[in-house]
Image 1 (cartoon, helix red, strand yellow):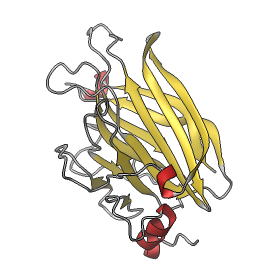
Image 2 (spheres, rainbow, N blue to C red):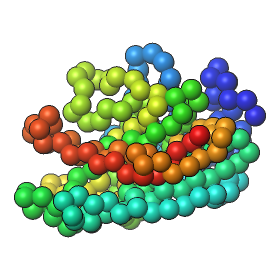
Image 3 (cartoon, rainbow, N blue to C red):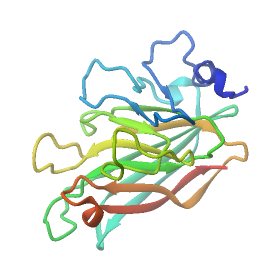
Length: 232
């Protein structure tokens, strides 16, 4: 199978087994141009299909080839767990992750950790398609947006962040004890469909977790880097 950018949508449908199947709407991410972020479901609407996947990779014919979990620790406090998976179907790989947080206070605020962006490294010259699968009841909030960028919430001016095709950023809202509104202790499953010509490997800075929904992002934001699977 050839993943040429011009035929990305068709290649994606074939690779995912989506041809003729109603499993919602995975989205190819742009690799050029000013529009970096793809809008998914910012209003958390039950009827919004964009970016959503209604089947597991196994149900689409992919085989699980790697699985690991990593504790998320800040200030010597375990605030959650990152689950990392890799599935394969021929030349197509799905890299999937889900973050589960607890309500443990981790700093002087006494509040639980709030995660608003999760980014993972990809190969900059390979096409990328993203999707999410919302496992309720733990994952109560949908994927807000995604794009090929390193920058998260409140880290750029304007509507679009700067481009970095070596990363895919997922805008999410995960908090096990939200001070206001609905708490969602788990993210959805966040999927990256791409190629990995030389397979995959665990790398030390595969993930960036960002908490930047604060009054002064320059001084108060918190970022964590975790090991995980990356395409080679």
